[in-house]
Length: 258
Length: 312
Ligand SMILES: [Fe+2]
Ligand SMILES: [Fe+2]
Image 1 (cartoon, rainbow over the protein chains, first blue to last red):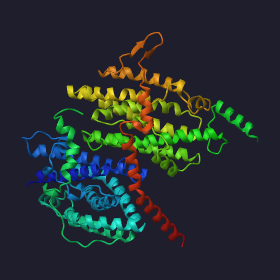
Image 2: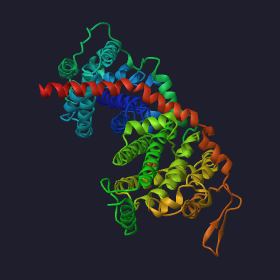
Image 3: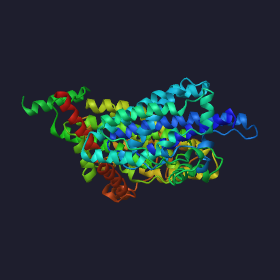
Image 4: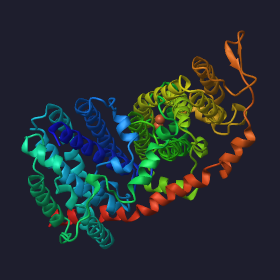
């Protein structure tokens, strides 16, 4: 794998994580537990979709450079015309939204990873990644604040909310290992100073998790078996139906303008 | 001061185009009328999120997805402003929401129609937000201060929504024959329900006369409806869509369109709960409220614990 191809895969993965989590988050719009949360989650989903557009556009441009024979793929080509085996997001973001505790815990576990990752990318040697991160870092800081605050409310709220949050943590913990399991592309980019070492990101993630769980009076689950495969395009059964929904118009009416 | 004198002062203030503010004396019926209208308006914003929310997951490009999501989010914000405006009249949001969920309070019937294709998202923005704007521009000058101010903020966003909706239909009308048919089909289904949004004809409108005297309303249902038709028909023609009204015709003498007759039987049926989606809309709102109960309780409990700790 050369550096251009690694960059392509990395930008694609960043875009896929954002578009999939953005889609899942948007599923609450109109159905939230309180009106203010409909608004907050729509905001977060909008940020994620905006980030996905930046990453996917860049991925398409990078691809066109190293695969000279292939036509340039736009953000929508990449979002709407790839099947689930070609999506490179981690499993954590594709899981169904579940109850509000699952939604908040999933967001928290992802945001606590996403923020140090974006912070590190603001010093990337790749100007485009740097530029995207400079904007994203402010958005993601808000996402983490939002999910942390709700996690503390749940943990230190009622008995029911505490139990629901703890259950969600136990259910989702197995999907956190994949966030930090670097693949060939990520290792290559870390060596080149383009993306951070995921081991470093993990340290910050772990500290954030400990700090917030303590405040929330929740227990950090033990590391056990960890799910993986998303980064290679081997997904859970949940991604396929989500993409089928998302891609329905583009697939039913190929090649038209919307 | 005797009540008759207060009432006279109140009406004089309204007549002089001064805003009535929450602390001012107002007739009990004025207050009731406003609570009914503002809360109904707020509920409409919230229930209105559902038909469009139905397409957020299926929006055909990332750009359209973001625009639609932002639009539905705006509607949630409108609901919030309006609940706050109603709260200034002494009724709590919880109470208003429970009136919606029990079926006691109404919301705009337009949201009881289904969104069946992507073109419906265009038609809603163009026609439904378009009709709402007619009403809301008028309400920017309504006599009750907090309501008028909420409307000023809302109107700016609604005109965006209308442009974005029309833009969807412009794109479809320039597209393939299937896309054009999709746009025409959406207009066929949404035209008449949009005209019904202005409410009963003036001769059958129970609340109108008093609302006009109090300057809550400033134009009649029929006037607003006519303005909407006059403004919208050329927009349909411009993109090659045909308004589904065989009697529609420009009348040179009165400088307005003549048009057909609304099916008031359908209008009344939908209001009575027999529209295509009344049951689904209420079920969705009730489910969101019930599923969210533990979340709201947790937030309250946590806030209580925090307050206790900081007091200790
Ligand atoms: Fe609105
Ligand atoms: Fe609107």
